[in-house]
Image (cartoon, rainbow, N blue to C red; front, side):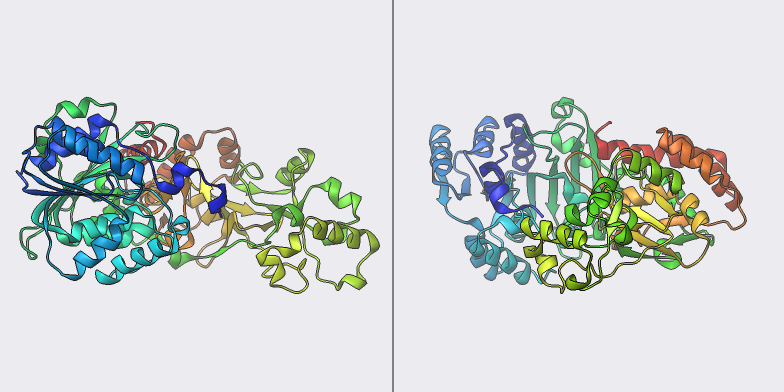
Length: 542
């Protein structure tokens, strides 16, 4: 968990300002429908106000701006004066307070919305702001989660205040397409908008941050029963796209409706033929969702990994041999798909913390050296940590068991299962997997194919740096082709992956498995291309 005290002032106020050329482009698109009124819910120092001037907007346009910080509000007011906007106002204060009051009237009042909402996690918002955030969801009858971010209620309330047929152009985090906390927003936008276009760049637009950002261009339905064209995603590199009229870009982008609108939007990156091939595969009788063939559970939650995960030197120093058990929990512990004696011994030679301490006995019954280690932990105040202090004794970790299969929570290239041949334990940086359909080895090896890698990209989420993360509910949605009595050569696969040749493994496993289901090597190459397309987008290697 990241704590508020550890965050920079910039992160706490969500202060990442839009480059002027992007603001000008977005503003040009919104202005092309000749709006008489525009909302800017988080104007900062007035980049989008300046964009109105740069696009020679009507000086009589009704412009309502909001800004929380007084110094920025003054700068924004000066910009309004400099470009001679006659009916502009900059209100200093929390936009959501005003927005919630206006939403209660149920009468949209703006023709257009512009801006770059603050990027602030809910946990870092002040209590009053948190209440206003929850109220936005309540008024719109949407599911609320405390994992949300400030930009989500800003978009929701802005859309609610947008008139039918109005346009919203904003710069927002790229995570809108895939994070779970934005699902209510995605569903709402899909319901009220006739078309949504996401302009997704290869580059990071905001300096000194790993925060990926996109442009969203959304047009609200003229009537509630109007059919939606769905979501379309345009991948761009550099700023050449700014030379194209935004209306042409918007009109020419094909939206994919239906399941793409109501779920994650990552599918909108793919074209119709690519989606058709994927659907053909997942509808095959021998292709299964993970939830139907395996169970997923989180790893062991220790509450203090530095105390409970130790190297051999610590085990020997405090005579902990009777309480030490093999463990893995990081990619460096298991770079392949096999966690066997060879890998465990190699980790020990590298002096990695390969031992999990499971101490069940009462303190008075423990050997003196073990008592000394527990006292050392107390001196470091591990016993005061939440997960430790709520159990008795604090040094006895609950829910300790291992499974034949493990899976790391995060990956860089592609997720993989790990065949746990030494009955090692795993921490909560990994999952404990139990196969309910086929052998552990078959499931581990079958997991490595382009279809499963594609569904992982479509169902997972990623943040700064492009690392893919999957939570249990997302893992359960993955599709895995299973063929019984198939030769996998697990040791050879393990060696290739450790050497960094995962793409070669994907190709060979795809041919080995998918051709037995009636698909061709050409289909396999198409799937590999789709997977690399999604992976490269996540890693910004377009």
